[in-house]
Image (tube, rainbow, N blue to C red; front, side):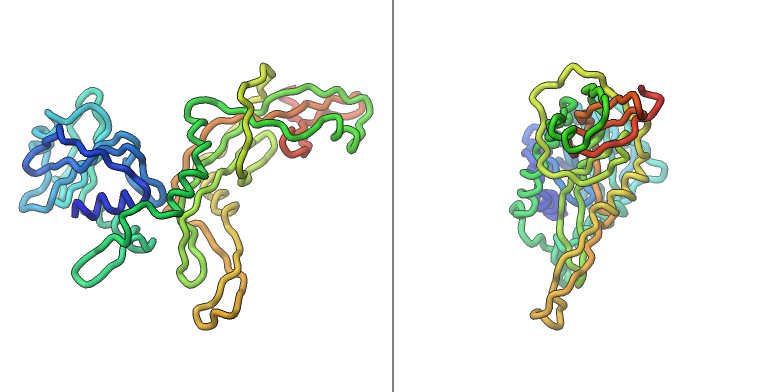
Length: 322
């Protein structure tokens, strides 16, 4: 089971550091420390620098007394303990300052392995489960490279580079007596990783970046954004309110739907359009703050408008922020 757990994580792109200085207990053993987190399906608390522990199958339940012995020598940081043994009723993880622990019992472990089977990551055979390939799949590496820019949003609020030439835009869209004022508009970029499911039980692991800008009523996929290397000292128009996560997930399902040609199993020479949808149970999302350059366009003859400097689209400016 230890090889199966680490195999699934490695198949999803995780890297595990050996932990030779950690001994654990006779019944709780260290599997390694995550130096590169996995991507794809639900991976529980498998975050960066989390230490993974395994409690093999046995005769007794995993109880508080056993955990109290284990926690004495556990290093500070985050820990993920996966137990093949049932957990004692109302088990509460022991607390220690600077240490955070999440415990999975047999039910969570079975569900996690089941997802890996359904996604095609694990081949099933009579009496055994085998990881198809413990090396990092090409699609995982492609996603890692494609999404690398998103990590910069963890450290700072990035500002999109404007792509609209204001003078050219005004020539094409003449407005009498307009007075433009440059501003920055708050937005969020959502990183979305998950499994697309298509016809004939086809699956594909994918990654998207989705831009949410309430001021523009925008929720759309973006590709290869370009950011300024500095933040202009301009007025920032705050968001009037962010979507709740449940609404975000619903909208993500809609914008990630796509139609692609495929060949039915019975006739490979025929190509027809098929619908591919994101499996909501596989979706992992997180967000980072961004700023979008824009202009407030004030005119004596009309109400002010807001011009998106990255798309050239114009929106009414809410009266409350003038």
